[in-house]
Length: 261
Image (cartoon, rainbow, N blue to C red; front, side, top):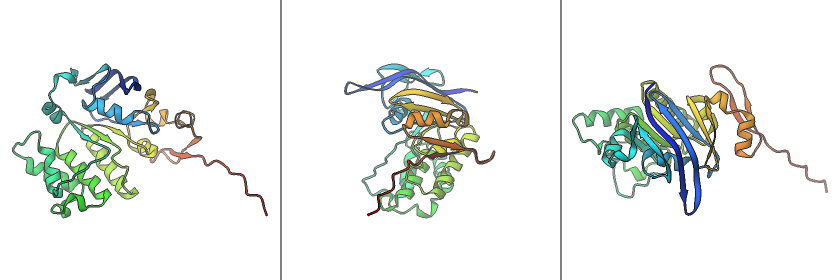
């Protein structure tokens, strides 16, 4: 398998607080890597470092074996596409115009086909003339993902792509992402939903307080004991069947019954 992106011994300090501690991670061709952990674990910061948007205090990021510092921002835009956690569009752009922005780094022949293909894949062709800011949160998420897809990069870095989607939209989007990976793309994504990672990821990376506490295949790494320790709450991992895999469930703490009056 070809190494697409790799970071070695990455540490990040912000306002005198260490956000990441000595993180090492690698993703190869045709692999979906999920970054998991509680709030404040450093997930989005790590994604920012991998994207080249944040410069770490120590450590190095490599794209295909080449130091990321050797790439200009224009070059990076041709190598990786980044979906941030929040996308804010203040100007009255249409859906089609937003997706076309994904072609900005290249502006070559065939752009129209890539834009159209991305909109079809995300099922947003019927809303192409609508203003982005008039869409629902879920519709905006699909349009933003279409923009990323239209960028047509080998590497895709996604920050909670399913966070605002209902369960049906979530399954559709993850099915699209999984298909892209099976076609040979490389995806690194932050998830809050452990069950999404369990079902779709090839490998997971577990963070807590900026430290890497585990990495490996989901079924081997996302154990009840490990997750309970990282999330500081009792968690069960229940086997369902071989096709769907285990399900992660938080254990509800029993409350004392109210005394009768």
